[in-house]
Amino acid sequence: MTARRSIRGTAAAVLAGALALTAVACSNPGGSGTGGGAKDSVVVGIAYEPDSLSPLLGYGKDGNSKIFDGLLAYDAGMRLRPALATALPTVSDDGLTYTYQLREGVKFSDGKPFGAKDVVFTYRTILDEKTNNASRTELAAVKDVTARGEHTVVFTLKYPYAPFDRRTVLPIVPAHIAGEQDVNTGPFTTKPVGTGPYLLTGWSKGEKISFKANPDYWGGAPKVKKFTMAIIKDDDVRATRLRAGELDSAILPPNLAKGFAEDSGRETYEATTYDYRTVTLPTHHKVTGDTAVRRALDIAVDRRTMVDQILLGAGKPAYGPVPTDSEWFARGTERRFDLEGARRILDEAGWKPGEDGVRVKDGVRAAFPLWYLTGDKLRQEHALAYASDAKKAGIDITTQAGTWEVIEPRMRQDAVLAGGGSPGDPDFDQYTLLKSSLAGDGFNNMAWYDNPVVDRALDDGRENGEQAARKAAYDTVQRELVKNPGYTFLTHIDHLYVVNDRWDGLSTQTEPHDHGLASGPWWNIEDWTPKK
Image (cartoon, rainbow, N blue to C red):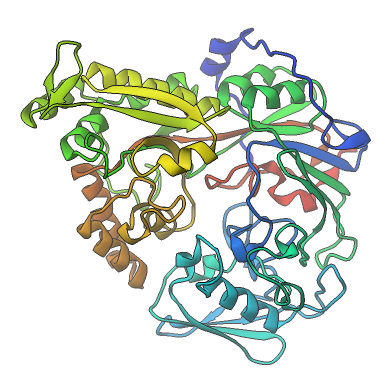
């Protein structure tokens, strides 16, 4: 996909002259070669960092991990292409066997050869229940993985899982290193070795992740010799450091990105995404677990105004995890803004306005807290807008900011302004979000959603190889979310990146929720070349 560089005119007009940034004292994340310094160095500002750098624990599972390669990779148009495999897999007629021929002559960065044993080790370790990988269910279709010699790997599936080849962008680790230590706590989790275009040179948690080009990379040594990801959780601080010249690029929310629109020497890249913002409505809370409250909130929220005023047009209304322009979106599940309809639903369900205007049923006030991540302006603004809309229907929402360490223990009872989304296949978006058996499993099914019809449809969509049957299954999921929405989906957001215009080869892909770390214009930084 070619990067979309244009900035919407109406949004630019809204923010003309409105950006005022507070100076923040901070250290330089990349030393002397940052922010337009060394010509072969790039420093980017991102909002989040991983818990681990081990693919065995989930790092890089969607590709673009820089340190590692998968059997396959995505190109700019999100088409699969060979990476450590020499070609796309050969698939048996029954869809149960995938055979990959491996690239010969590839070495890990410690000089040891890559081979089939490393692929087998990687997948079997992830599937091992002793491995702390929250994404293990993504490989639930795998029955076994075996090596045939040094350069052939065969996956046998339990059922014809249609998008399996897209799961094989997962990075491959060296069995001779990771297999000799504790997979969950060993040094490989912070000091990994891979076959990728970059080598890790340092990770200062909460500050930066630093890389240098792999001179022996099988795909050719990158022209960008030093690459640093500066971890800057606060949006305003990220913008400040970009303007101060400490960063070459940063992901920014729309209101801050627009402030750079007229800067010479900088380009703004806009990536379409599957990234949604949603409010979890925990099943175990007396208010948010009430179906009438859920249905009322679903139509009391003014999604279009959120897109226009919060995202400044850089996004679209969301009615579920699947974007409205996806072939998998169930037409007719769009929810119109209907405040009077929301009030009728609550009236009919026995939620009557109290003296203070907040509804009450059986002595329970229609009130609950809504948490959002500290420093994330988009989540804050979505939370405030949601609470404002809910108040008009008689529901009292108290917004609160916190870190994930504060929020996660409260997720069973308290609502959260959350994000998610993954391109490629509806199974990727919906299974971990809605499957009842995954409730309470880390950040999977954060709302503890429990709907037997949805559970069956999720299994049908995952285990059926026929496109029409899968489409019917995911239509069922989306229509059930209209009847009983365990989440209020608000928007799908475009990602905006401001980049110093010093390199050629930049583009964007259709991005997942995990923006900045695995995505962004630097998804292919190993292919960038200096502008002449």
